[in-house]
Amino acid sequence: WRARSQRWPERGVRYLATRFSAKEAFSKAIGLGMRMPMTWRLCEVGKLASGQPHIVLHGELKTWFEAKSLSAHISVTDETDYAASFCVVEIADKKSF
Image (cartoon, rainbow, N blue to C red; front, top):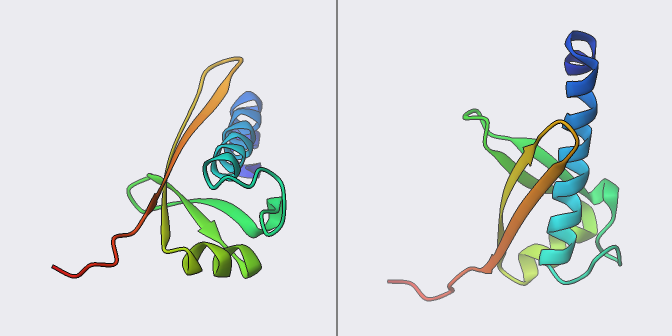
């Protein structure tokens, strides 16, 4: 965030907005909203080497999520005045083929 803000202040704000939006989309996709074990600090939006965003969970939330055999897919976008995210959470198929 700091590096982006130094180069282009508006881009730094947009970056934070997309991360906030992604956490909110994730919290709704798992059906908890902002209730335990979902907290802002236990959910992080990282990025893969390809630049693709992904959800990184910690602590209680990670334990809860893994116990339910869930996986999450996140997409983020922003324009001048808007940030938006889309999150799909799916139950992993426990059957082996």
